[in-house]
Image (cartoon, rainbow, N blue to C red; front, side):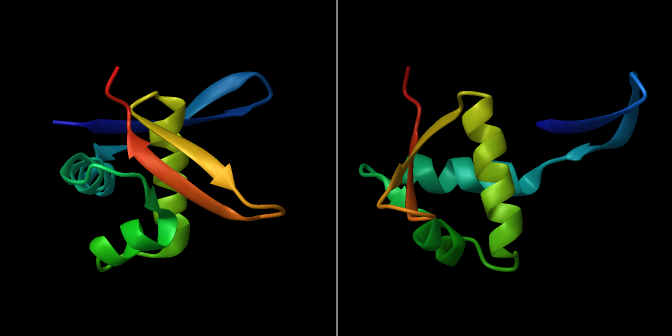
Length: 88
């Protein structure tokens, strides 16, 4: 069971925003585990229906920060991100 805990600060104090199971992160990890090559963000969004691009991007960056996946921006400007499972 994966539990997501989001905290925010105000004037030096921590506040709890939510505690819930993060199904979207689990789906992203499953999609990346099934493939052998990196996937673009658009490909991940197509594999997971019923969610928005913003939510998927948010979860991808959270998973990258937790070192569960790796990501790299390719191209200039906003560009395209590619993502793959961290097998270390």
